[in-house]
Image (cartoon, rainbow, N blue to C red):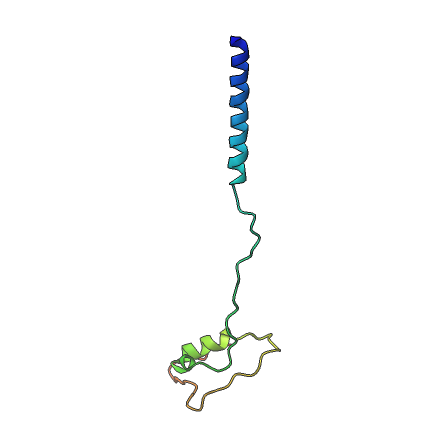
Length: 94
């Protein structure tokens, strides 16, 4: 009789361990396949005023423009915008 109780207890312990392992493995991750939404920046439509602050700011702005984009509209230039000049600075190669 003692032998039967020991076998039942061992079987119950094994079943409990298997059930616990199955439950824990089910909690291991998410089944969500939602990709993060990446919002593209708004297209540039005008030359920013910050580009006219200095020669280096203007050159940095020009270098940031894509040379291979044939689909964008031309940029507008505000009526008060003037390209900065500095006779003391060496020309920068674009």
